[in-house]
Image 1 (cartoon, helix red, strand yellow):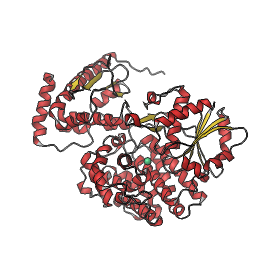
Image 2 (cartoon, helix red, strand yellow):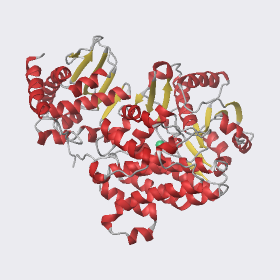
Image 3 (spheres, helix red, strand yellow):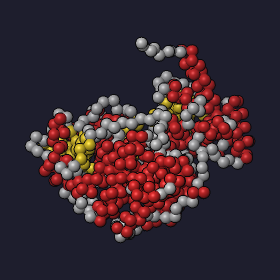
Image 4 (cartoon, protein in one colour):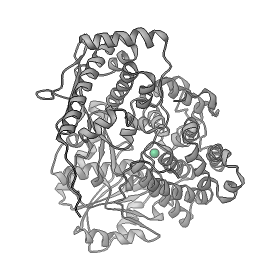
Length: 415
Length: 176
Ligand SMILES: [Fe+2]
């Protein structure tokens, strides 16, 4: 492993993971001097009965003051402001965020307001603006993908101004991430597959992009190893608690990795596809990941070769000649995608043109690729990508991903 | 034994003079390139009108302030941030870190990956400004130096490499 000349890593995460992890929450809250709870979640989680499981796991020492389940799929500033008012009205002193990335980010945003005694979230955008600890926040993820339960970032839309607000601070890392397989047991196979591929893309990008470092890479490799060992089984047997715990743990490890070493073009392009065509993030990640690895091949051969071990296991790693390992790692990701495609009867897409909504409508039409490429140039992750990307490069990768054709390595412009 | 850190006020002052000069020329080159280079021109065209950004070292500078007015004209606005609304800050965490980047010991992307600067403002515009900085470095520096600053040295037309580059230099020196 190569050693960077300089790196930063913040590992301020309290992970509580296990089959009865939820039952630890009252103790965690009391140790932080809190007992009046606001639970933030969304309708999907609420309908799946997960709020009840959570509330039943609490005991009489804790009072649930209010349960707010109106977080939209793409969190925005209005709901953050509304929730902050309700938090104050109900004199809460701690927060549990129960959900996926949007719920996590909403709770982080609201926590800024209620902790700083402020009314306008816009005043806190950027890095390093927060100077104090926030109110106790416990994150309970209900998908195994985003890793937002352990990251120092929150992204919240500001639709009135047509922009996204970014918040970065060590203080945004939740006080505890409670990972309990009961929370992910009911995820359908194709969502399990897509969210796991999101976690996989965090791990891969954390180990090949410009801010890679030994700590992030170690976490990322462990995350990939867990995904390889458990994802195929869980997609076929969704009610496997041990596998669910492993995948949720992998997502948290990958989250810790990329929270420190950031992500690159797979996310640059994936965010753009998501925002232009409203495609779920995980589905974009699955399709784009092998293309992003190929695009950066000439700059990251060593790191890609190292990834083969967790991606394929010891036997294949040992059998592959060192010079072939990087390409084999990319092939392995394609193979994982193909396996998921078969296991979900095609619901897990491996090409952009195959991504559809519930009504089988195509979500990413070919004629929107130029707009997606233009949007991608405004995504901050582009600067962490090892190779440079201009408009034409983005379009080339998107076209390859659309048709499901591997990129021709000789056509990639190299620096 | 106690090791004392040697404080070299002379050297710090030299750094400040060097950076002030570089940023002054850089600012004028941006203004010039926004008129004559299509790449820089189109980056600014996509920015909102009345937009001002500042590149510099936290907390006491030196700074470079560049703005686009409502008519779309791009101007170097000097080295002072006083009495100005600045929409985007690209601020290196110290004068030494700015020096390391502006002496090409660390490329812009490496500096970013190592968290050497903080950015406050909208991300799409910050991306555009970083691309403008890359273009200016390619325009101003000989290839072997510019290669240290950017991830991928671009493959430009002969006209852009010669005529446009000369025009940026002349206009930056003359202050047009
Ligand atoms: Fe992601």
